[in-house]
Image (spheres, each protein chain N blue to C red):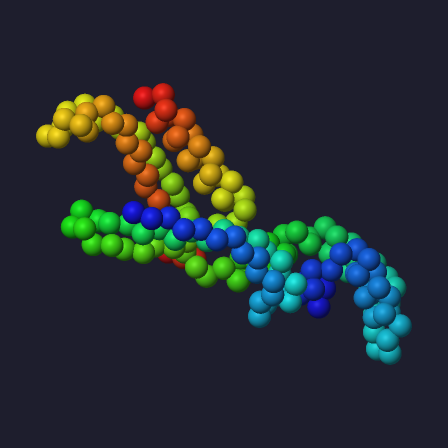
Length: 66
Length: 94
């Protein structure tokens, strides 16, 4: 139903003072077959996000050709 | 201290020199060993520390396929390509 994203950088944590870790958080709003809306969110490293993005690019290309 | 600050080589050198000058501090040989260890393992150690601060859902796996609806109760849905995506989300170990 909806997709939201945000790019963040974790600066510091209790285990590491200088973390400087960039990440992407995605929030998906999904409707199941009964129409009930569910929120799911997940976090990706930049590398994981690049793979995620590449998958969707592939899907878009296939959708164009079908 | 070195891992927590994710020191670069300049910071590392300054830090280790200061440690050798302290009373009850390290010898310059020990400083050299520590420097070599950090240079070799810095990336892996930092990665491990990063993973310790990740506790949200992660994308474990993703599958997709594109379907073409060939028959439908509603005529206007015929020949509509649809992408179906399956995402596996989980936390550490789940």
